[in-house]
Image (cartoon, rainbow, N blue to C red):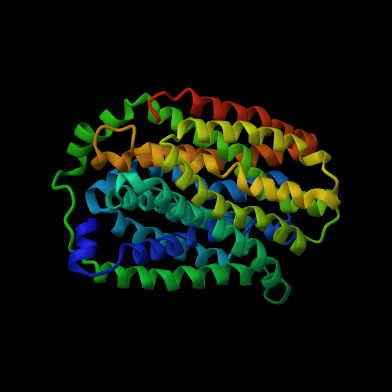
Length: 400
């Protein structure tokens, strides 16, 4: 694939990675547009914290269903075409959401959008694993992983501003426009690198399932990575989603400023992801770096209720650097614990399934704990979750 890009189309790999990164931003842009305008949505649709958690988490419900089949689809049709399909799903879901007048319809639109998130999360790393030299895979995966942080930064900063003059539907229209623009750019790139004419596995899906999928699913190391990724999301990623609401509700910080404050963690996370990729490549280790950082992060989560508002920016900065290291290490390790790089699609699918399960379980559970008990209880809940995720990474001996 790398040769195809470099020699036939004369398209620099760096440019391809940049377009891949910016295209993938459409997924977290749609995923995170609920949190920074949560009070307005709760008032408009007359919903509570539990339903708000559902609105956030249902985005990933489709990802659970499609993660493993997505790996098979990538093997059959190629990751380039699958990303195009994901963009169309994001686009359709966002358009439906824009014109939703009921909570149920908005929930359905989020499920459709979730199809896009599921395929991008699997297809993006698959492109990297099959085009980038193994010695540079960590830094490339770190670069790509920053798409989540970039999407969060854009959403957390722009959504509160858009809603002032355009209402919550304006936020949905913005995400629709962004997705449409990069769908067009992606199609142009696919023509440039001849991705529409590239042939994939000649095996039908049924044969692929028997020969390919089940052998990969027997890999215990992949299941450990699956657990680590899921528990990472249930702890840190969910805290990111709810932190603007917490700062507005309990610290009396204006929602727009609270969202901008939390977006600092997202911005620093993009830097941290790149640094983590470089360090893990240099050290030749993903297991210790990722596991230790997630366990250390647990202590940061426990401190959230006790940090004075005036000093909260310091915690925000630290949260931006340490927790995001785990997913970079996990995704980079996924292709290194399998016996054949051609099986990367299903390996990535399994890790993404763990990620999506976390996104489904985490917000609903976190929101329910807040509603039934308190914000403090919800933050304390994430501590053992993060520690367990870190331990599964450390005990994953097959990961270097």
